[in-house]
Length: 397
Image (cartoon, rainbow, N blue to C red; front, side):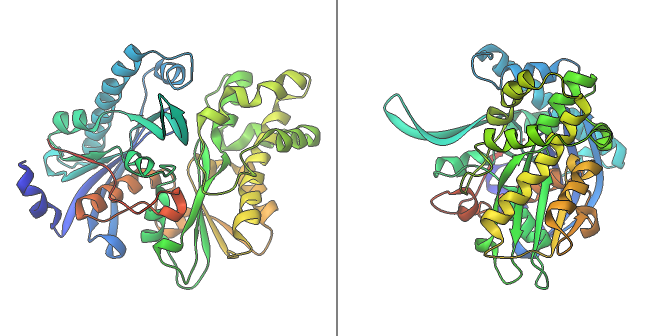
């Protein structure tokens, strides 16, 4: 493809786009194939296929080592940047095979990449103050190996303009799920939980969204440490335990993020292994099922506390739609119902016609389409950037 062909390509009425996402769970690549028509508020999508391509054994450990201070090295990060791109390409090929769709018929790939470190707050470094973020799995490698136009590195542009670079899903939420009848919120519980408020009378600039606090990340650490499983499937372990009120109270005092003012975002830098370390040392004798139950309930509490503190006075919601791995955790879902009460319906996002597991991957397919259309897709009120901007790097095949 020549660069002067981009505009003509962008004007295609219908595109077949692959969205790629690997998150803080570090277990694999979500790949979705969608048919997209239009752009902006006229965007229409139809999901054609979805796969989760697992990471090879040992990769999660390497990614964890190289995402934390004092444990990574530049050689590993250089290699991981290319390794992940190869794995993303494998995911695209698996998706096309499963969907019985020719790779050569894919028009566009939108890739989030794997966040290796996220430092959006301005800090002085060598005489300059700036924020920074790093997502690896280079989109240029994906473009060259698939022969498909690829757009990636969506967060960088927002951080360059003083934003948090996150969350980016709210723009997608507005395009796809805004209702003129009900105030609603979209909650994604991946490694981190993030919330998007959609006011029925507002436009995209009125959207409020932010990371509320821990999602599955802390729970996964406990599941691995005490039960030697990658995650608490369906919340079964937590459901067999009881909430420990003393630990819950300590968590509320220990967690400095939940009460932090918006806009805000967080990640493994805060909710990694060190987050729970002081509590685990103090409460060694507590049944491990109780630990998972308490942390799962605390995850739901973080969502509600943020809603109650930062949103409710401005807009009361009637519906909360949940996506991500946390949507399958029955303990978290029941805790959300407990905290939000009878006036807010807690639902799975699949009731809006979209796969809970595929939602974030679909988001980056849509964001890639927006970039190609020349539409800004960050929301300054959400990220804190000084202005709206077109996101992503366009990489030619």
